[in-house]
Figure 1 (cartoon, rainbow, N blue to C red):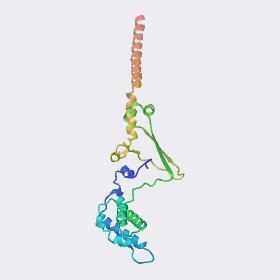
Figure 2 (figure 1 turned 180 degrees about the vertical axis):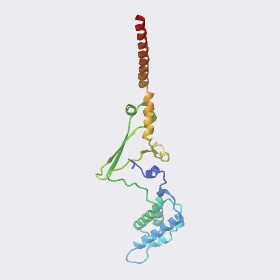
Figure 3 (figure 1 turned 180 degrees about the horizontal axis):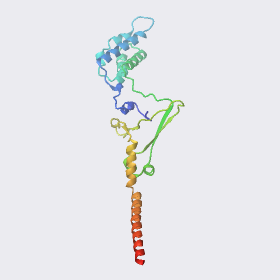
Length: 229
C-alpha cells in the first residue's frame, strides 16, 4: 500500500505496464465502435426521425481506432464524431466514455483500504547515526514508515517497503519502485560498523593494553617477591 502515488505509479510499483496506455488492437477497436453505436442507439430521441448522431457513428470505422492508446479512445472518438454535422455532443461524450471503459482505457487506480493509513518521514543523517551507527548512516537513507491499523477485528502483515525517487527533472526519469534492504542485512552492517567504530576501537585497544599490562604487572610483582625472599 503506497503512502503517496500518482497516476500509473501503482503499475510501476509492480513493474507492470499501465493497460490504459496500451494501443488498441483490431478486436478492441471493433468492440469500441460497437459499444458506441449501441449506446447512441439506446439514447436516440423518442420522437423518431433521422438521428444525425447515430448516423455519424455508422461512418466510424474500427480501422480508424487501431493503435490509438486506450486512455485516448474517448478523446479521439469524441473529436471525430462531434466534427460531423448535427451530432449531439452530450450523447457522443457518454458513448465515448462507455467505449473507453469497455476497452480497459480507464487509468489504473488503487483502492485504498478505509481503515489503514500510512505516513513516512526521512530521517536526518545525525538521527540515523545516533540510532543505527555511522556506517549505516553513510550507506543508507533511513526512512521511517508508520502504518496504522484502525480495524478492530483484523490484523495485517507488512511484507515489504518499496521506495521510488522522483528526480523532478523529467517524468520519464521517474525512478521505479525499489525494495528496501532486508533487516538482517542492515543488522549485519550495524554489527560490522560497531566493531570498526573509532570509539569501540579505542576502548578495545585500551582494554587490550590494560589486560597485557595487568598480566605483566602480576609477573613483575611475583618476580620481586621471589627476589625478596
